[in-house]
Image (cartoon, rainbow, N blue to C red; front, side, top):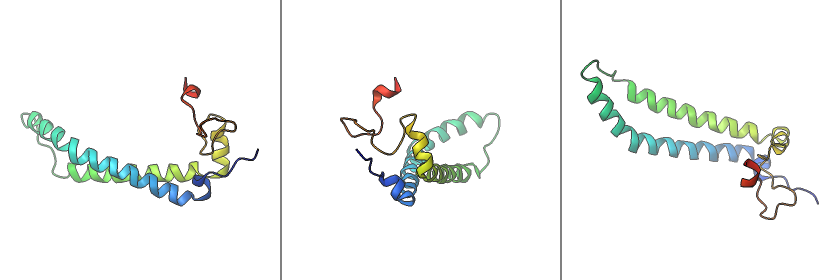
Length: 112
């Protein structure tokens, strides 16, 4: 039985772009929904002792963008066939496991 090349390995740029978009959406949701609440609480608490710099929000957005790009780069590296082959040893390959009834690359039982 031959193993088909996973799409992440055949199209690494697409895999990396998907990862960047997924991570960016997550960061935007966190910064847009969670951060305003946390920011308000932090500013109220710290107002008694110090003021938060005005550039803090912009810095958080820049850090979020850096995280998204880093996730994309790691996704691209993991799509390199040699890296994917090494990941197969620990069950994290993009390719389905040979003989896996579900056809998935990683079973929950492998983690336990």
